Length: 437
Image 1 (cartoon, helix red, strand yellow):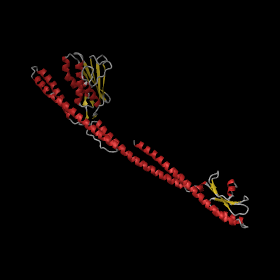
Image 2 (cartoon, helix red, strand yellow; image 1 turned 90 degrees about the vertical axis):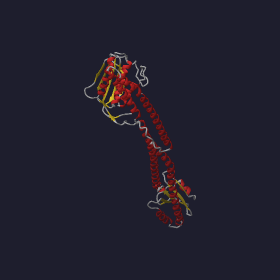
Image 3 (tube, rainbow, N blue to C red; image 1 turned 180 degrees about the horizontal axis):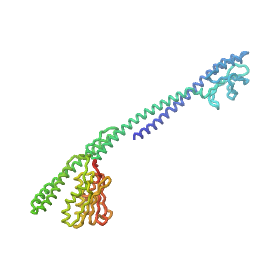
Image 4 (cartoon, rainbow, N blue to C red; image 1 turned 135 degrees about the horizontal axis):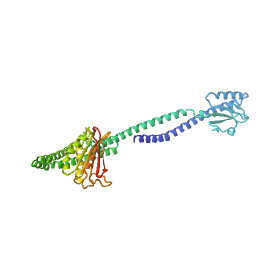
């Protein structure tokens, strides 16, 4: 925008200056030519008056030659006298039709083909016919002083151009600065900082945009706050039935069964508490914290948790991972939730007895979790999405996996396993760093 304003101002100023200064330059040139012609005409009339008496005497030609010689000098117009018999006193001059016309008593000036200007003044009262005073002006003498005025006009034009560009640059800087500040606020809002507000500045249109952007931020903040409070309230309502389940589990006669169910209820309680904490913490809290977790350790722990249920259903649950940690850029709790979602998806959408294989692979700059099952797999060409998993569920479980991978800088891939069934590969960015929201 700033460059466009400068170009537009330069073009407009150039056109205005051309329309103003070119006529002024031509006027100055015409005025200089008129002044030089008037001066030459005055000199010619003065010389003609002196020659009228000198040529009437016996030694008139000698006196006339002296007068003509005194009229010529360095930097002066070339002055000659053409007598009636064609004799020329002073610098050479030819007898032209204009000279013959001047002999009839008419004084005038004209522009010869070679350039410049010639002034002819007849000398009256000379025996043997009228003599003519011939004053020739060169182009340099005719337009003397116009170069200085042209340079002065050019300097004025350059100054006005620079002044216009300076004003346009200040105006463009103001407009661009206001637009950039609005863009910075929009970037902060897009990054999740809903406290960002724009300071209205610049022209009325940009001030209006700033006010509308602030209004939009207020509306988004209100909507998100209401949604998070609703989520927290719903999660809080689960505390009562979860507490009832824990009491029921403690009342079981089989200690091993009671311990196993109690562990599941405790995990459910932790999940509910995590939902409440996540829903009620500030929107930007933890957005820029550096987080990391050992993907292999998290997957191993969740596989051990689900293995008793797999054994009850006759499923094989295999796990493979490198012996050393596979550090990825993700929160441990979110990784555990993603792994639970993947394993739970196998339990929900495959028949009992269908096995699953979990493997953790270390990449050059990331870590990958691959889970394969022996179920029916995904329909051809179908990619599970939020709200549509293709298996009669909401698809929110796989969306947890997708979101966790994306926030760490990775992605999720859904394909068919080589031996049938489904194969899901979740890639997580390696190392610790700021999380992306």
